[in-house]
Picture 1 (spheres, rainbow, N blue to C red):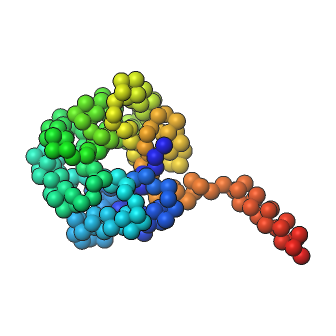
Picture 2: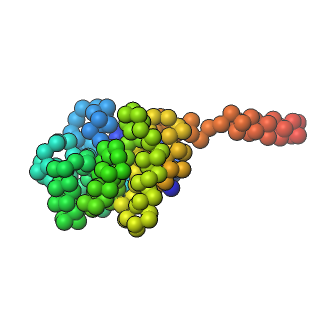
Picture 3: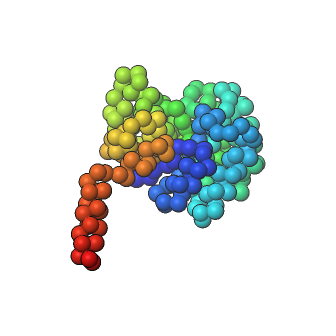
Length: 223
Protein backbone atom coordinates (compact mmCIF):
# COMPACT_ATOMS: atom_id res chain seq x y z
CA UNK A 1 0.00 0.00 0.00
CA UNK A 2 1.42 3.35 -1.05
CA UNK A 3 0.03 6.87 -0.62
CA UNK A 4 1.15 9.54 -3.07
CA UNK A 5 0.61 13.24 -2.42
CA UNK A 6 -1.36 14.90 -5.21
CA UNK A 7 0.00 18.43 -5.00
CA UNK A 8 2.60 20.90 -6.23
CA UNK A 9 2.24 23.20 -3.22
CA UNK A 10 5.46 23.49 -1.24
CA UNK A 11 3.75 23.90 2.15
CA UNK A 12 1.44 20.92 1.57
CA UNK A 13 4.30 18.75 0.36
CA UNK A 14 6.52 19.65 3.27
CA UNK A 15 3.75 18.90 5.76
CA UNK A 16 3.44 15.41 4.26
CA UNK A 17 7.20 14.84 4.09
CA UNK A 18 7.57 15.79 7.76
CA UNK A 19 5.18 13.00 8.72
CA UNK A 20 6.82 10.26 6.68
CA UNK A 21 3.72 8.66 5.11
CA UNK A 22 4.26 9.90 1.55
CA UNK A 23 5.49 7.24 -0.86
CA UNK A 24 5.50 9.59 -3.85
CA UNK A 25 4.27 12.87 -5.35
CA UNK A 26 2.05 13.45 -8.36
CA UNK A 27 1.46 16.67 -10.24
CA UNK A 28 -0.44 17.66 -13.38
CA UNK A 29 -0.97 20.89 -15.33
CA UNK A 30 -4.14 21.78 -13.38
CA UNK A 31 -2.36 21.26 -10.05
CA UNK A 32 0.56 23.38 -11.24
CA UNK A 33 -1.85 26.13 -12.33
CA UNK A 34 -3.04 26.52 -8.72
CA UNK A 35 0.40 27.72 -7.66
CA UNK A 36 2.00 31.13 -7.99
CA UNK A 37 2.86 31.97 -11.59
CA UNK A 38 6.46 31.51 -12.50
CA UNK A 39 8.83 29.12 -14.18
CA UNK A 40 7.41 25.61 -14.51
CA UNK A 41 10.87 24.07 -14.57
CA UNK A 42 12.01 26.06 -11.55
CA UNK A 43 8.91 24.96 -9.62
CA UNK A 44 9.65 21.29 -10.31
CA UNK A 45 13.29 21.84 -9.35
CA UNK A 46 12.18 23.26 -5.99
CA UNK A 47 9.95 20.21 -5.39
CA UNK A 48 12.94 17.95 -6.04
CA UNK A 49 15.09 19.99 -3.67
CA UNK A 50 12.37 19.75 -1.01
CA UNK A 51 12.24 15.96 -1.37
CA UNK A 52 16.02 15.74 -1.08
CA UNK A 53 16.04 18.03 1.95
CA UNK A 54 14.11 15.34 3.82
CA UNK A 55 16.52 12.69 2.58
CA UNK A 56 13.88 10.95 0.51
CA UNK A 57 14.04 9.43 -2.97
CA UNK A 58 10.35 9.40 -3.86
CA UNK A 59 8.73 8.88 -7.25
CA UNK A 60 7.82 12.30 -8.66
CA UNK A 61 5.39 12.39 -11.58
CA UNK A 62 5.52 15.41 -13.89
CA UNK A 63 2.99 15.65 -16.71
CA UNK A 64 3.46 16.90 -20.26
CA UNK A 65 1.27 19.84 -21.22
CA UNK A 66 0.39 19.20 -24.85
CA UNK A 67 -1.89 16.91 -26.89
CA UNK A 68 0.64 16.45 -29.70
CA UNK A 69 2.50 13.15 -29.34
CA UNK A 70 5.74 14.43 -30.86
CA UNK A 71 5.70 17.45 -28.59
CA UNK A 72 5.09 15.13 -25.63
CA UNK A 73 8.33 13.34 -26.42
CA UNK A 74 10.18 16.63 -26.81
CA UNK A 75 8.85 17.97 -23.50
CA UNK A 76 9.62 14.72 -21.70
CA UNK A 77 13.20 14.77 -22.95
CA UNK A 78 13.53 18.37 -21.80
CA UNK A 79 12.28 17.39 -18.34
CA UNK A 80 14.89 14.66 -18.25
CA UNK A 81 17.59 17.06 -19.44
CA UNK A 82 16.68 19.46 -16.66
CA UNK A 83 16.08 16.91 -13.91
CA UNK A 84 18.09 13.89 -15.02
CA UNK A 85 19.97 13.95 -11.72
CA UNK A 86 16.75 12.84 -10.00
CA UNK A 87 16.49 9.14 -10.83
CA UNK A 88 12.90 8.74 -9.61
CA UNK A 89 11.35 11.13 -12.11
CA UNK A 90 8.28 9.77 -13.91
CA UNK A 91 6.80 11.41 -16.99
CA UNK A 92 3.01 11.51 -17.01
CA UNK A 93 1.47 10.92 -20.44
CA UNK A 94 -2.31 10.65 -20.92
CA UNK A 95 -3.77 7.53 -22.48
CA UNK A 96 -4.70 7.71 -26.18
CA UNK A 97 -3.96 6.19 -29.55
CA UNK A 98 -1.33 8.76 -30.57
CA UNK A 99 -0.14 9.04 -26.98
CA UNK A 100 0.89 5.38 -27.05
CA UNK A 101 3.50 6.36 -29.65
CA UNK A 102 4.96 8.82 -27.19
CA UNK A 103 4.98 6.23 -24.40
CA UNK A 104 6.66 3.66 -26.64
CA UNK A 105 9.29 6.13 -27.88
CA UNK A 106 10.13 7.25 -24.35
CA UNK A 107 10.28 3.70 -22.98
CA UNK A 108 12.85 2.84 -25.66
CA UNK A 109 14.96 5.62 -24.11
CA UNK A 110 14.51 4.08 -20.65
CA UNK A 111 12.13 6.79 -19.41
CA UNK A 112 9.85 5.98 -16.47
CA UNK A 113 6.21 6.53 -17.45
CA UNK A 114 3.03 7.23 -15.51
CA UNK A 115 0.16 6.81 -17.98
CA UNK A 116 -2.63 9.01 -16.69
CA UNK A 117 -6.32 9.82 -17.28
CA UNK A 118 -7.39 6.17 -17.71
CA UNK A 119 -11.13 5.70 -17.25
CA UNK A 120 -11.53 2.04 -18.20
CA UNK A 121 -9.84 -1.33 -17.88
CA UNK A 122 -9.24 -1.38 -21.64
CA UNK A 123 -7.28 1.86 -21.44
CA UNK A 124 -5.30 0.59 -18.46
CA UNK A 125 -4.42 -2.59 -20.32
CA UNK A 126 -3.24 -0.67 -23.38
CA UNK A 127 -1.13 1.64 -21.20
CA UNK A 128 0.48 -1.31 -19.48
CA UNK A 129 1.10 -3.15 -22.77
CA UNK A 130 2.86 -0.04 -24.12
CA UNK A 131 5.25 -0.16 -21.17
CA UNK A 132 3.88 2.28 -18.59
CA UNK A 133 5.40 1.78 -15.14
CA UNK A 134 2.39 3.38 -13.43
CA UNK A 135 -1.15 3.21 -14.83
CA UNK A 136 -3.51 5.76 -13.31
CA UNK A 137 -7.27 5.20 -13.14
CA UNK A 138 -9.41 8.22 -12.26
CA UNK A 139 -11.85 7.10 -9.55
CA UNK A 140 -13.99 10.24 -9.26
CA UNK A 141 -14.28 10.83 -12.98
CA UNK A 142 -15.21 7.18 -13.59
CA UNK A 143 -18.07 7.62 -11.14
CA UNK A 144 -19.04 10.90 -12.84
CA UNK A 145 -20.00 8.95 -15.97
CA UNK A 146 -22.12 6.50 -13.98
CA UNK A 147 -19.71 3.58 -13.82
CA UNK A 148 -18.70 1.63 -10.72
CA UNK A 149 -15.16 2.87 -10.04
CA UNK A 150 -14.47 0.12 -7.52
CA UNK A 151 -15.40 -2.55 -10.04
CA UNK A 152 -13.22 -1.00 -12.75
CA UNK A 153 -10.25 -0.93 -10.37
CA UNK A 154 -11.00 -4.44 -9.09
CA UNK A 155 -11.21 -5.98 -12.56
CA UNK A 156 -8.06 -4.19 -13.70
CA UNK A 157 -6.12 -5.24 -10.60
CA UNK A 158 -7.23 -8.86 -11.04
CA UNK A 159 -6.10 -8.95 -14.67
CA UNK A 160 -2.78 -7.29 -13.82
CA UNK A 161 -2.03 -9.68 -10.97
CA UNK A 162 -3.24 -12.80 -12.77
CA UNK A 163 -0.99 -12.08 -15.73
CA UNK A 164 2.04 -10.88 -13.81
CA UNK A 165 1.80 -7.36 -15.20
CA UNK A 166 4.62 -5.25 -13.78
CA UNK A 167 2.77 -1.93 -14.07
CA UNK A 168 1.63 -0.57 -10.72
CA UNK A 169 -2.02 0.46 -10.55
CA UNK A 170 -2.54 4.02 -9.33
CA UNK A 171 -5.94 5.45 -8.38
CA UNK A 172 -6.40 9.20 -8.55
CA UNK A 173 -9.28 11.69 -8.80
CA UNK A 174 -10.08 11.22 -5.12
CA UNK A 175 -13.15 13.21 -4.03
CA UNK A 176 -13.93 11.82 -0.56
CA UNK A 177 -12.01 10.20 2.29
CA UNK A 178 -13.84 6.91 1.76
CA UNK A 179 -12.56 6.81 -1.83
CA UNK A 180 -9.07 6.09 -0.48
CA UNK A 181 -10.02 3.02 1.52
CA UNK A 182 -12.38 1.76 -1.17
CA UNK A 183 -9.64 2.10 -3.81
CA UNK A 184 -7.20 0.06 -1.73
CA UNK A 185 -9.88 -2.55 -1.03
CA UNK A 186 -10.50 -2.78 -4.78
CA UNK A 187 -6.84 -3.61 -5.41
CA UNK A 188 -5.03 -0.33 -6.05
CA UNK A 189 -1.28 -0.50 -5.48
CA UNK A 190 -1.13 3.26 -4.99
CA UNK A 191 -3.69 5.96 -4.21
CA UNK A 192 -2.73 9.56 -4.91
CA UNK A 193 -4.53 11.82 -2.45
CA UNK A 194 -5.12 15.61 -2.27
CA UNK A 195 -3.56 16.97 0.95
CA UNK A 196 -6.85 18.39 2.22
CA UNK A 197 -7.88 14.87 3.23
CA UNK A 198 -4.82 13.87 5.23
CA UNK A 199 -5.60 15.56 8.54
CA UNK A 200 -9.15 14.18 8.62
CA UNK A 201 -7.92 10.77 7.51
CA UNK A 202 -5.93 10.28 10.71
CA UNK A 203 -8.55 11.81 13.05
CA UNK A 204 -11.41 10.23 14.97
CA UNK A 205 -13.58 11.68 17.78
CA UNK A 206 -13.18 8.51 19.85
CA UNK A 207 -9.41 8.90 19.64
CA UNK A 208 -9.70 12.43 21.05
CA UNK A 209 -12.03 11.13 23.75
CA UNK A 210 -9.64 8.34 24.74
CA UNK A 211 -6.56 10.59 24.87
CA UNK A 212 -8.39 13.22 26.92
CA UNK A 213 -9.58 10.54 29.35
CA UNK A 214 -6.07 9.15 29.80
CA UNK A 215 -4.58 12.59 30.44
CA UNK A 216 -7.36 13.72 32.78
CA UNK A 217 -7.05 10.58 34.89
CA UNK A 218 -3.26 10.96 34.98
CA UNK A 219 -3.54 14.60 36.13
CA UNK A 220 -6.02 13.61 38.84
CA UNK A 221 -3.59 10.90 40.02
CA UNK A 222 -0.75 13.46 40.18
CA UNK A 223 -2.74 15.93 42.30
